[in-house]
Image (cartoon, rainbow, N blue to C red; front, side, top):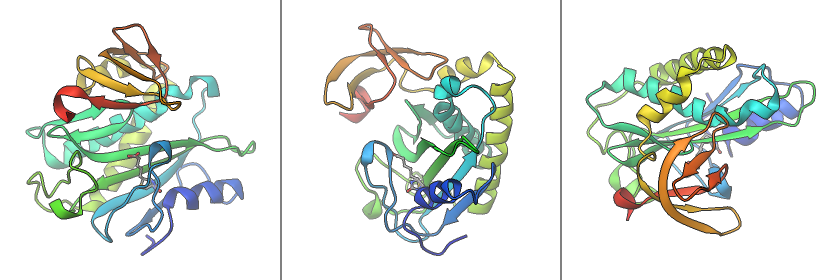
Length: 238
Ligand code: BTN
């Protein structure tokens, strides 16, 4: 565990590039001075208030099939959180891979493919807002376990559970378990919601999210198939 670093994601991507990391390696930090989120956003958390780590995986399947893996990583985080906090809390997933608690974001994931030809894989960065106070939250759409009334959670137990779940889900995916997509649908709060989707180029679609594909893409009622974009749940977020 690092007391402080720029970004666990940058650290692990660099180690992979230098041939110094193998599948299963994890970098954890108490504080990041340059934490990164999806779509070039920053990810900010005061020291000790979040669980911040990155993990390197080398999935066996053909790279063209890796689109499900960011969603799979969020399934693993969901399962671990549910096992730690209990089923009575309203946990859900917002496409592609945010974890919501009571419709507010408590965890974000950043999945990046590595270019190392010796060891092609994905660095999965996970940030979970554990004990942030209301004042420390980055946006009104975010929350933390503490703010949602969840008593002190053991961060070591949570990270171990996430990594164990990740291994289990990856194994299931490698064995082509057809139930994974349906299980994602069951815990998604995006599906069935009115959404505003902003594509990387700035194009926006307003529609209803109706399904996810095995490739990880989101399908809108209006016919668009979205593989990368930012989603706003209209009812919960507006
Ligand atoms: C997002 O919500 O857009 C994704 C956030 C991912 C944040 C985690 S924290 C650990 C790892 N290091 C980073 O710099 N980012 C990820």
